[in-house]
Image (cartoon, rainbow, N blue to C red; front, side, top):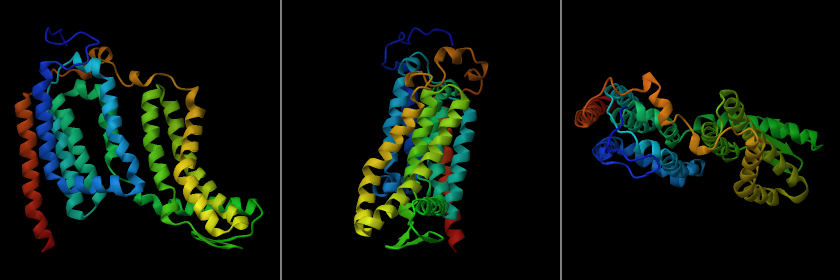
Amino acid sequence: MPPDATLPAPGQRSLPDTWRTPLLGLALAVLALGLLAAREWGEMLHQWWNVDTYNHILLVLPILVWLVAMKGDDLAQTRPRPWLPGLGLVAAALGLWWIGRASGLNLLAHAGAVGAIQGAVVALLGKRISLLLALPIGFAAFLVPFGDEIIAPLQTITAEIAIALTHASGVPAVIDGIYIDTPVGLFIVAEACSGVKFLIAMVTLGVLVCFTRFDSWSRRALFMLAAVIVPVLANGVRAWGTIYIAQSQGVEFAAGFDHIVYGWIFFAIVVGLVLAGAWRFFEREPDDYGWSLAELEAMPLASDATGGASIHAALALIVGLTVAVGVAAAIVAPAAIG
């Protein structure tokens, strides 16, 4: 991109005037897409705030702001150039939202609602800025509440780990599915004890750490493997600890101890151990994540010279597509019910 006199020098964090219209257009696109999927956004907000499995998602929004802010210098030296092929992402996401709404599959509808806004960012700001902000754009996928689908297998895995450790510690016990019968009583690996909350939060953190602290894909893969395996194993150990403590201190004491330790201490300890183990292998500082503007300048595929359009045209197409999908959904839904 040739130098532009209107763009500030490196180190100046305020965005130039050339960003005002694109950001206003993006805000209007988000408003239109948000109104279309208002029900889905309401459902997601409810889950973030009221369902403890998804409380960690409340931290995703400030993390997104932090990730964008770290690219402030590079953003201030470039300008948004709408990229019409990005509208395909918006259309695909709206199609996913429509399928989810029509089929009653909330996960699909929620993913479509988030994906439409991700697509709008790509379409309105262009390829170069989207590549510059690839991590926060992609990380926004963690705004979608997911994980209920793996609760049942996690319950089974937790029960198997717990019974193995229970036998190894000399406590006689019999397992039947997710039920573990011991001398002091019957223990059930309930949904709340499956460890899904722990696992989802750890995977979210794992992705953030992988792309802000590692360069090599091999180290990223190993860290993500640890982010999946360690919380599952740790949850099995926690379940065994509850059973073992109950043998001498009683079931009520063990249940209270488990709630306090697992809720406030255990997760922090495991996260600390995982990060401590990976610390010496970190390869870069967080603010060096992704591609720099200089690297993108040398990438022909990152050029915004093709597929461009005015911000007004791109915004009009997004709003028109949103209205069309909304009208179609309103027409098809009553027919499907009937």
